[in-house]
Image 1 (cartoon, rainbow, N blue to C red):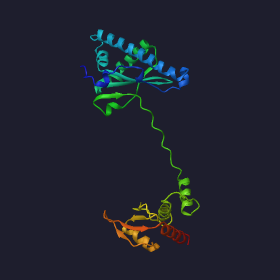
Image 2: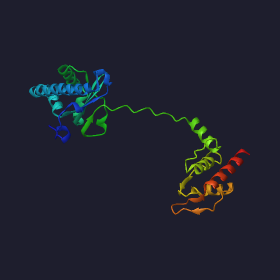
Image 3: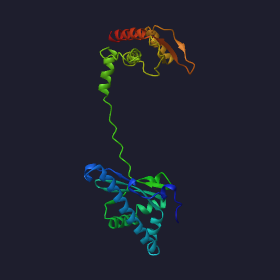
Image 4: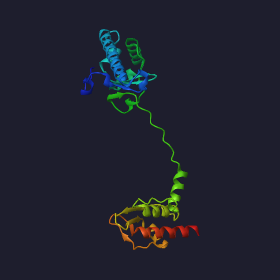
Length: 256
């Protein structure tokens, strides 16, 4: 059965559909990349059309190949140093199964021979996600997650808390330093946040849980608590100087 073609499937396969993943100098010059992509697209398009005509002529003796090519659309190609990977639009799960089975292997081998290019089909799991209009294409590998240097982060935070690192141009520096001191030296971690008012004196409101608020009172926070309008949170509004004074008080108490 012929699948209904989408607008994207009706677009011609041109040099713009070839994505280049090789160094530009392998083709001599950047301008040559475009020419090479156009040549690859023309060659693959011609080979594809030939195989489709052959499959139609042999539809009675090789119905699987005819069904595959009737419901398969070439919409891109990724050129890699090890060869080119076809980007295909597959009509359904059944066609996707044909593509990744012996019929698909025969098709790709015939396409290689007809185009005289190293071509492969992406090893994809798209069939598990979609039932129709499956895109079978090369997916760039995800970069490895780099583990943060927690020791370096802790060292920088300690330098800020101790006053060895000072960002004089940051209007939030005093509040940030106090927040770090509360978390790392006073042990107040859960539910602690801050909001800056952009005031010349650097007004910042510390928001915390009622339990953390009682701990701040014990530390001698120089401000009266006020309740939040959103949930059970307690706020303390401080100036830059008050943030500095409270931080120094926390450092003295934590060192004792």
